[in-house]
Length: 269
Image (cartoon, rainbow, N blue to C red; front, top):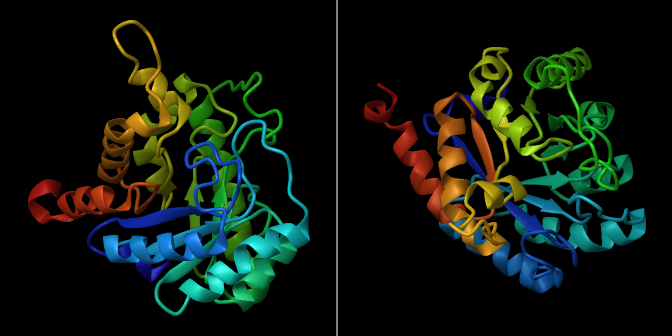
């Protein structure tokens, strides 16, 4: 287990999408210079880790080739790594290895398949559950028992990573990745069981589609992406109270404030 997982307050991972098509920021940080500036803003806001990604994993997203993904993320990682811990959000072994060479110390892996790279490079690894791929994962997600199935999958992958010699293995239930709104809520309600596995849990609900539905107006119109901060904070706070040791978010400053409150002895008692 990572020493990070013993910090008194839960950690906050800031999302930095160096992409033209991410669901939330819509390419706002696609320019490398702007991405670096935003990364430094996250540091000022209190981010413990900045998660740099060059390929969107939103539903329906198209894959990006290796050279283009490298072009997007490596300069940003090189610029930020001297100032904050950096993770790389990728499913490609080549990109993960290059990111580590550039200063990243955590591989945030939505495919849960890159443990050999993390082990070989001597860095941390996040194993996330995903049913399907971005192209098809939200068409008809189905489970018999979503909490049990996701938990068993993550325990298996985490054990593989640990056996390979990775000292820092995180597990992430993959909220919104091949899940309906009901699946997401069931996973959130079952987080305490996931935390009881002994592996530190990372949860990312920030601005996701199911929050738009839950935050719909009285006339049934879903809350747009830029109006999902209340739901993002509520679910992040719930996750932290249920034992998540890190949350992955767009709104860093507000979430750091929430994490600090959750981490106080008075809030935990």
